[in-house]
Length: 204
Image 1: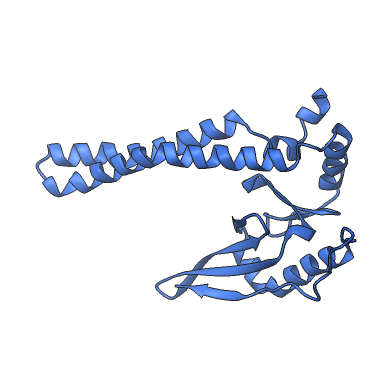
Image 2: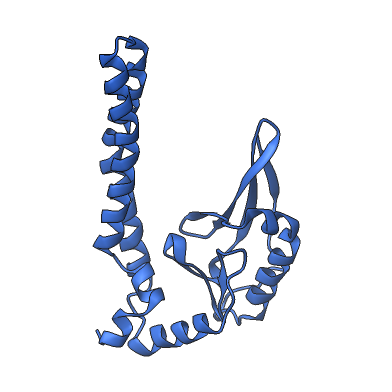
């Protein structure tokens, strides 16, 4: 693989990357220590109730191998889907990326693909069968939003960074995504749907 392609942001994002796994492992380990150390100190001071912190730390460490395995499998699956891409394909996508503004600090709507760097996600518009917007609430106060893209092979969840702006302009994003998909010519033998099913649900 050409050195220039290896430096491409899209290539690095969707291809298996040990660095990403190490970062994930460090984050989960830090969270575990954030529970474990205070728990030990408080238990040593005589408050046995702090054992709950130690149990939480152990739980996080038990979950870590499964989290890493899931991330590794996700990277392998995405790499397999685009194994046929040539150097020029990646460079073309990279050129589009540099001329495209990130929507809600999360989504890049390229010519033929939806790209989400934070998730290492590259989806053809023709793959997206429907989307869901899940609004997260805590004590009746909205504190986040997740968009779920449903494709024939799987569903992909993306947490929106600038969720406040997204929820205000949600219908604008839906229309832009629909327009992108509607502009793409379908492979022969496929029938184009008239619309994208876009349910909107609230999650308390």
